[in-house]
Length: 495
Ligand code: UN1
Image (cartoon, rainbow, N blue to C red; front, side, top):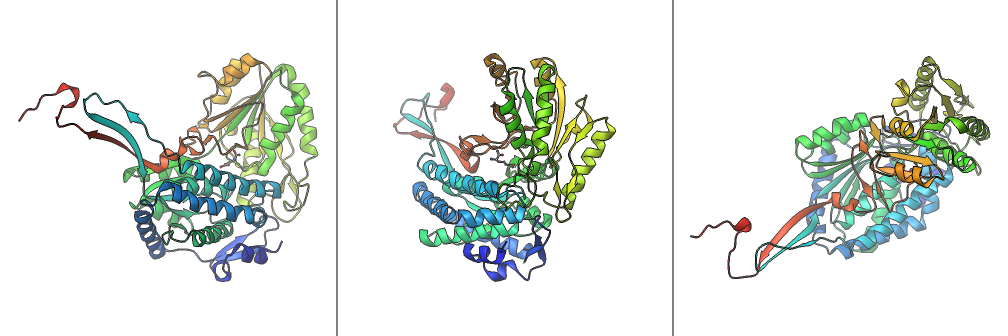
């Protein structure tokens, strides 16, 4: 684990990663891997001013040319995938194939955004007036503030930044204070791409390091047109109204409490594999992690023992080592939250399998299966840890009602080979989430679809489909190419 070499290969200046006051620890063994300098009010103000100036220039660059910068960023990411993927693993603890997968998501969204740079399509609209054209155009928006969390320390930035940049915006990124090194590495790669590009305005994409106070400056600054936040519902509940109070825009990707339904016709073997990945992958620290499982009565006694066998055999340990599937929790607070949730479940009468602390360095845990009779109490809350609450159900209606009866609405899934059940789950009376899957767990979404959820998940959409529209300003344009002045709605106003 040679962080110094990795960082220098990725182009991070020695000064940027040592000697600062914000210490960075790897969750692998808790050792210190960096000490970065934090921003203060004055440096944030400068960053926002420079970003705004950069936006004023960048918005006039043709979109396909803006796409070229993102293409070059994608090239840098391809060339440095191994190093950046390793650094992700070291800084946030996810296993290496997931660290590399995260960088792959960045590459994928760059590719998507490059194509998009030639497809920022508007509509032409039939005018009711003779000699008039109407159309809808999408204009660059301004500075986009990106506030991201530790669990996807680099991909979340890229879903926002790749789109924001081709849409003609500047970006200011505040990564989690737990993962500043990966952010500095991505910034270094961006700067290399910008040098190759040639004439990108200075400060087009910047990183701001710090804690809550630094994030608040981005949230409250009128120069930031859009604030995109990935984090807890509690955080979103504060950020949303603050941005709205200054009539800014926000894009909120908040908590999930994702459920799966296993129906009688399910392929049990496949369901077990999918459940394991979704509930225990990234040590349960994805917004999309599977947290609640509803199993139909008739198959419960088939599925649960085989799920427990699979859980019992999960390789837990050093996330850099080949074969490991479960790395550490990010820190002590995450570990305490997991145990708080397990204690509450116990008090609710649950039977708990797993959940024990493993080893003496870092916070490694065996993922837990928590069997409960009732869907209540702690089950209704998102705990960012590998805890799977399992409950029985009888009818499909009952399972859908249970799955929808939480405040969060990010992702959901059903395991069934019954077409009627699958389609019902995907219908207007089925899952109420932003993401609904059949025979796939709720996590591990591809970048091509819009990513986000409903209710307390915040309603934002990032990544694919037409999520780019959140990063642009919609303008309805009407042109009169006649010599008359007919008024809409037949109004007469002759002077
Ligand atoms: C998140 O956890 O905030 O669908 C994002 C997934 C990943 C993204 C997760 N592609 O699990």
